[in-house]
Image 1: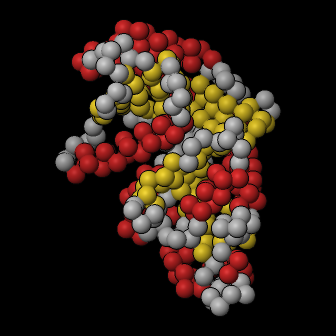
Image 2 (image 1 turned 60 degrees about the vertical axis):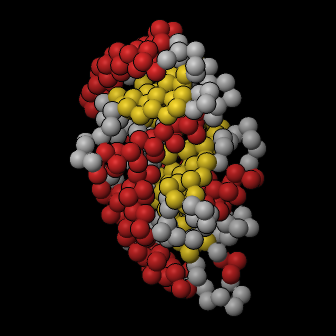
Image 3 (image 1 turned 90 degrees about the horizontal axis):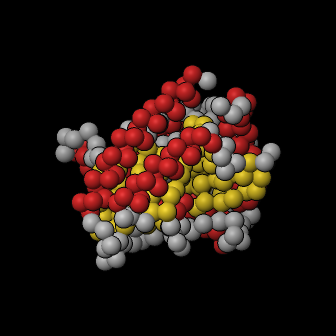
Length: 206
Length: 137
């Protein structure tokens, strides 16, 4: 649920990084946190287990500057990827305005990617959101493994598995090195703000 | 659902929060929605990251709602955390909003609870109006 404050001229949107466990959702947020200036971002809040796996969510707030006199603030959340944390994933999805699906390019994770995307569609539906209507960007992460001895899925395979019906914009990335992280963020922010503006600002100020 | 607040809405909400703060002796109040967005704040949050606090509060409420459900309750209406110097009191406003009140040992939990109960009632009325208006548009 986007929040628009006409008084302070601010639009707040909630963007969720979704995907299978150990796919790099938290790494995306950490890279954004590490490479942005602290006057445009808040604290990186993480609720982790002792083993550094996300238990509940990570959270980072970012100011993206102004569009048509409105300050745009995006709130980035990650969900825990592990299958048994479905209840917390649903909690975090509440009021989502845009989704980044972080898929793992390692061949052994192929099934996990598909399962996670199906799980996302079900959970969104439960929250009254439609995966085909909400802004979604897909990120094929861990592309830096190409050429290593770890078997990696090709982009064509991943597109067929995950994006055949959705036809969402996609980015190849290495969240660890930062490649594609800001490309993904820029695209989902653009789509989300456009979607929110279309839904809300078109109606004008009450 | 998207919520649009007008200047007048914000002024009204802040007035209620200000009144509650001065009568209860608490030093900061935040109004947030259940998805973790900060709507309005009043008082002095000093160096606190209120945006992060809003996100964590919404998550905290979500998690305790599940505890409530396990106990056969619908949801808990208020939560309270006591610290060495700072205390925090959370009250639910309708189904979509939460008020966070920060206070220290210059006031008491009893007084804060008494004053927040009144303002929760008033804010609930305002938000019912806002939601109805947003539905109509």
